Length: 209
Image (cartoon, rainbow, N blue to C red):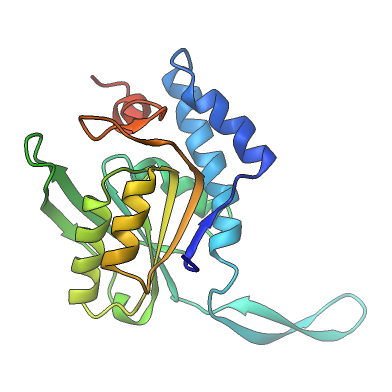
């Protein structure tokens, strides 16, 4: 799958190891999610639209590429996706932010939308969907369906940990969407949790049960 990038970088692997640990507290877990997101952002932004501008240095004028204004929107899937927002903003603080709320039916695992608020002009932006865990792929697929219905043509997905099943389903549903994951785990278990995984990312981010 040419549109799937699994980073597996030593720095990321080190941070993911701490992230997985059941003894890692909420504060450190949240910080690690942001740090890993920043590392994934570096890769995901490699083909963001740019424009050539003129800059005057202390020595002379030169030209340099800069990211086009209002060209990027990040879309965290509530609630766990919120933990990734600052990781993107640490590198690119002017990215617009939309929010999509999805909850998963515990019996059917089918995602249901309960909230959607997107930036004005998003149809002309690169929309980057944020969700720490790509498990069944249902929430990501539903969010991309929603974005495409709004006219968005350029979409990427960023995840911390993915299951092979989720990657395959997302790629099958939306082969035009670029997928970036810090790491890919072994599989989903019988209740569709990623294993070895890290548990429930939302609960660990926000200290809930």
